[in-house]
Length: 75
Image (cartoon, helix red, strand yellow):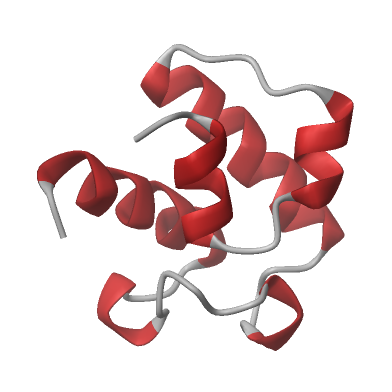
């Protein structure tokens, strides 16, 4: 993983209290312990803040994995 993808994985995992090594970037949020709807909103807020982006409501609802988020913020 490059540095920005590592930063994204760390950002997501910080919000769900998981080790980034335990969450594959392509794992669906429904299969990741702690990534519930409330955590999803915290993740989106943290990603927007850390990377200086704004996600649309459609992107927020379609983001199902770290790799989806990376694509949406153009990493």
